[in-house]
Amino acid sequence: MGKTVDIAVVGSGYVGLVAAVCFAEMGHHVICVDNDPAKVKALQGGDSLIHEEHLPQLLNKYRNNQVEFTTDLGAATEKAAAIFIAVGTPQSETGDADLSYVEAVACEIARHLKTYKVIVEKSTVPVYTNEWIRRAIERNGVDRSLFDVCSNPEFLREGTAVSDFLHPDRIVVGADSEKAARLLQEIYAPLTSGDYYTREGIIPGEFTSDAPPPLLLTSTKSAEIIKHASNAFLALKISFINAVSSLCEATDANVQQVAQGMGLDTRIGPRFLRPGIGYGGSCFPKDVAAFRSVAEQMGVDFSLLTEVERINANQKKRFLAKVRAALWTLRGKKLAVLGLAFKGDTDDIRDSPAIEMVKMLIAEGCSITAYDPAAIERTRAVLPESDKLRYADGIYAAAEDADALLILTDWHEFGALDLEKLRTALRYSIIVDGRNMYDPAKVADAGITYYSVGRPVAHPVRELVNA
Ligand code: UDX
Image (tube, rainbow, N blue to C red):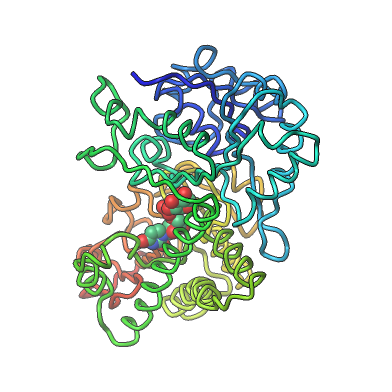
């Protein structure tokens, strides 16, 4: 076991909460602070609030011992050696990240700062934020020698957040002082030394080979840019393959084969080359916009990012056109929709392309019966049931008597449908799959016409209409 560090994590959203329990799993003492008393109470009671594998288990293991939940940022500041800021940085109207929560936290920390602390940006923030934090703290009367501000961006994905945190590809620490860098190195030592991976009963990673992750030490500004640049690059990869999928559709080629052929080049790699209905979620759309905005403010031409966004928006319109092409007209059509979350294995609906699609289809005059294994309650809060939208409690209940079935989120169970049962439930045997979950020939063999993304339409030998 390495050295135990007293850590405060401010913000108990996705990144904050996962970081808090994972730091405990790595052997540290953590105080997790949130200004929402209801949230703090729920977490103290063991309710993890988000749908995330391994999180309930770790929360129950460490709450009330190695992880304490509180609303008291002042007391947490006084006790901790490192304070991780993991509050929200939502998108403002101009596309910039709204940093008002970060500023408020920095000012509050300043009021309680009496001995040396390392303040760490964990939220995704634009370059120069570390300087703003430093200035805000100094403006509140704190001497520069009493703190350092570092950047330690987090690369976890929703759905695999805990596992990603504990088995990262890399750890990036942006620090402009040696003292601060040393503390961050100590905090991550259980991972970088490989110690954690030799322990019994660890949380498993996605890949089995657990060479310890490298810790890359950079300047604070470089670390801030690494996070934005990484997310923008991944979004670009998705938009690229989505544009290629359009070309495949126009030429009767198969994007899956094209992606495979590209991905075998180790310089390109196979991941994040799945075409679909466009990327969504709480990070990519916001981070691409924020990065574009930073470039604009610095007078740098990065219009490539505008193009990434344009292709992403267009991908949804193209999917709508595909549904129209499958059904001839849309007004009055009854559609079954599988998937509301922005991707599988999460109940998160922030910037979900599936929900955007549902809204677009309703605007076209369709009525929708939707099902999602985890995201219905969250969706209901933003899209209440109406004569145009109903929520079903199962896949086949949603499909009953629908003119077509649409797959909008890549939940595993949507890739293992009972096609025969579906064919008899649907009025017309049509699937429009926005996530390429099936081998087209297999669906056509089951008597269903299958539309997917960037692959030729698969028709059954004889299209069956259920009487
Ligand atoms: C992302 C980054 O992956 C992560 O490193 C960062 O910390 C936060 O943002 P997340 O938003 O959880 O993570 O989801 P991710 O799995 O990256 O998917 C983002 C979106 O892209 C989803 O809408 C997903 O469906 C879509 N996607 C992903 C594709 O359309 N094709 C792909 O090949 C991969």
